[in-house]
Length: 296
Image (cartoon, rainbow, N blue to C red):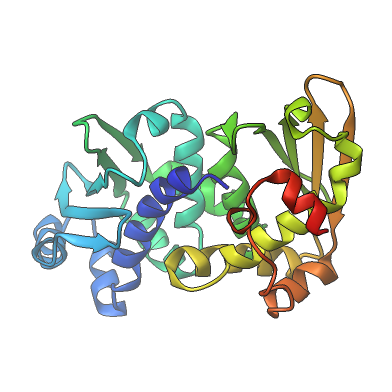
């Protein structure tokens, strides 16, 4: 997945979740009556007083307010975490992801109370370049989202979120010769589609499949290690295992027209999560592609 885009999306989701999860039963009950605007204002002031709330290197919640019958969250995206232009280019998809986050079990109680009180959610983003964009989710849209996403398990939501977080920024240049062009979800796999300039590898693409699989397993193994990002990736692959879905990778050689595929099975994903492949080297630990193939 694209790290920058995932960080942008996670800044949004985590910001909403962090505010939602802090609301006790007593605080949430204030939303039952949309006529008690002053009570809601006082409640929101409490959270606003805790701002800015940083999410590591990803972003910062700058303020929380209640304006025009809306809960308003202002978020700044840190320079290395992504850009507002990415969100602007995918407004409908981004709204869909916000709605999905609102339907998560940890947010569902607050979302229902906002629906009852006919209170909207407005999320405003800014980035290091000064660009700004906003997303408004009405109470009616929240209600539709709950109805739509309540049919999905939490693991299915994690998978859809993960795939979406990469897909809206495609095509994605992985390295000098490899471009991720598409993703899809099937009953058995999450499928990654790559174009590869195989003339530069000095080997036929089909001869490289074993290395490609080992490298992908190595990348997954290292991506689920320590830190916020690692935990997020681990949850994605745990969700795949729970849903009995593996990973399929499809390579297309843009110069020769040759194709190559490989699968990482559910049992292999489970072994990755259990640390069975922690000793595999990363691509950076090999001097170049040819040396890596010779090692294997």
